[in-house]
Image 1 (cartoon, one colour):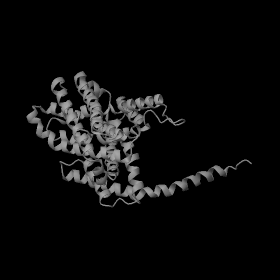
Image 2 (spheres, helix red, strand yellow; image 1 turned 90 degrees about the horizontal axis):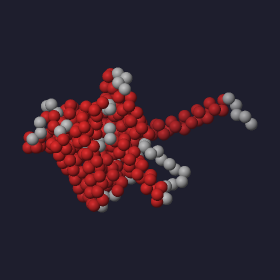
Image 3 (cartoon, one colour; image 1 turned 90 degrees about the vertical axis):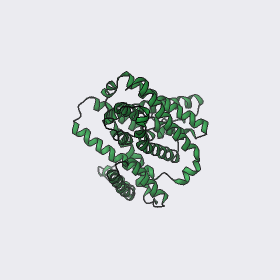
Image 4 (tube, one colour; image 1 turned 45 degrees about the horizontal axis):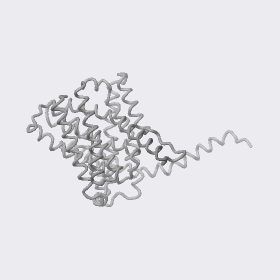
Length: 349
């Protein structure tokens, strides 16, 4: 019996109605995320030393550990932590353009590549030595070597870890990035760095883009170099994720552990979107006003996503982790700062 012309319309309506309860479930959590996001920006405005990203993670963690993150809020905060963060990563690509790499020169590019490679490899080795779970060590290594929470989000699916692994990695990059805002400007004089060199050091060593801007802004004349170096470092996010995914896929195939009929994408779709955004910006066709608006949206979405991620940070989980993850994070922070400083001193920027 052939279905009538109204059957497809009926099924479409049924599908939309089926989705409505799930969408309504998101509203309480997203409302809390929106309020916490506004509070984070307000706090950053009132306290110049405070970064909105840091405030967002702290507010999210406070909700969770105060027992205020109830079941009604979890669908919305999870949506923010996963979907909004992925959109923010894609929009981050619109802040990058391939000519920025050319502006760095070979020496500046070498500093960026060496810093990322040594930090990523060294952090994973230290994690293995400390006995930190491999997925957690991989996420920490990615966050510290590239761009904090955005990098952790990009590597999350490839790492095949759990929510605790992600929460710990986010907590560590937030902690150390916040410490960098305070400590790195104090070290500029003793380390003998002029403003441009200091900016290059900050761009090559501080994790999150917002933390980089906050740190470099404390030294007049350092911000431009810091942003150029930092965004050039972010460009390495996609090849790093793709390289790890390819290596794991080959190991799984060689050991026969791959699941038949289940072939996850080599690179997560939003990382492909990130690369496409870089390519689009590099054409020069996107109006400056659009890029500026996209940058604002990206910053807001990232802070909102960090509120959601912050709700996954539980003091009990950090206690169960013991001091090993904290030692790993601090070691990675010292490693990235030391390698970047050596590179800036030896190779220039």
